[in-house]
Each structure stands twice: as structure tokens, then as C-alpha cells.
Amino acid sequence: MKYIILLNSIIILLITSCSTSTKPTKNNIKIIGAMKNVMWKGELVGTINLDTIKDKKGLYGIGPVEYLTGELLIIDGKSYVSTVTSDTTMVVEETYQVKAPFLVYANQTDWNIEDLPSDIKTIKELEEFIDKKALDFNRPFVFKLKGQIDSAKIHIQNLPKGTKVSSPEEAHQGQINYALGNSEVEIVGFFSTEHKGVFTHHDSNVHMHLITTDRRKMGHLDKVLFGNGDIKLYLPKK
Image: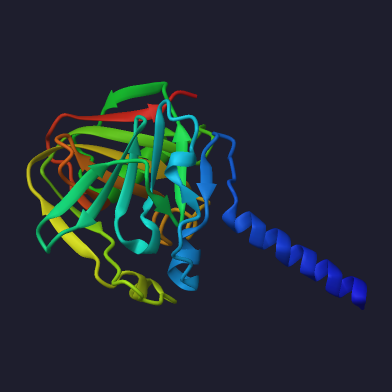
């Protein structure tokens, strides 16, 4: 009996360790922590300081700021943090001096670039298009888009200080939504069919953050209308 108890303890320890350590995938995507641990277990403290990532060449990453007090985006080696200042305004700062409770990131310098088809208008349509386009890709993988959108809705986490979290509803307390009109933007996303609750939500295979090209607005992308603008899709070279 004591050996069974010891074995169970070792298994629990291994599972716990894996949930918070860096887990490189086939595509060298690195995953720190997990969204579900933040949303359901209230693990809000930062598990990684972005400044400890040594190789910043072609670095891309997304996640929330620790204690859900903002959003972060790493795009081509530069790190941006957005925080709420009011219901209609935000501050976007370029800095690596920030911690995240969960983070997905990768170094990617070689891209295949193509025009996004004009009939792709929404996130769901984009997700389906990328899924079919990348059937033979190693997954997960990073992708990005650049160009003009018709409209978008982004949000920034703004959890009140001291709030305890044990559900997604509690985690989104204080969240502020922002509407964007006609804008020149860049979008960084990570695609996976196997990481729901880790770095994508339970109903999606993509997690994307948007930043305007003037670097004045940035947040988690909830909704977008690509319209008929010139949008370039960047997929990693295999």
C-alpha cells in the first residue's frame, strides 16, 4: 500500500511540475503555465518574467499580465504591454519588464506571405482557412496578419486588486472592451487543435492579440471584420 501511495505522489508531482514548466513542442513553440490554471484555480501570479527570455530574434508571444492587470504582445522581438486608463482609453508601453501567469511564445523569422482571400471576413472563417491551409504543418504554430481592417473589438484584462478567481466569470471582472474602426493593424496568433484551456479558449483553435501600427492600441482580439482591405497572412515556412 505504501508503494502505491508513493507512486501516486510522484505522479501528482510530475503533473504539477509539467503544468508550470516550459514545454517546447515540435515547432519549438514554448508554453508556460496554462489559461485554465488562471481561470479556474486563480493562479494569477507571474510564472515567467519576459526579460528572462534570452533569444529575442524573431520572437513572438501572447498572454496576460500577472494578476490579470493588462495584456502583453511580443511581435518581432519587441514586447508591448497594454493597460486600462478608462472605459475608452489605454496605455501601450514597450517593455520586457513584465510577468505573465501563462505565455505561449516562439522564435519565427522565415515566413510564407500571401494575400488573405477577400471572402475571409471573420475570426471563425480565418480559423477554418488556416486549418485547411496548414494540414501538413507541425502544430501548434505561430502566424500573423498585417493590413487594414474594417473594424475590431479587443479587450484588456483589468482585474480589481485583491480579487480572488475561481471561474472565467470571476477572471473577467473589470475587463474593458474597446472598439476599433478602420485601422492599420498587425495581429499575432497561435494556432492549435490540442491546447484548449492551455493557451486557447475552449471554443477556439486560435488565440490572437491585435496592435495598431501606430502602437497606440493593443489587446486580446475578440472580433474582427477584415472587409476588403489589403491583408497579408504570414504562415511559418515548414
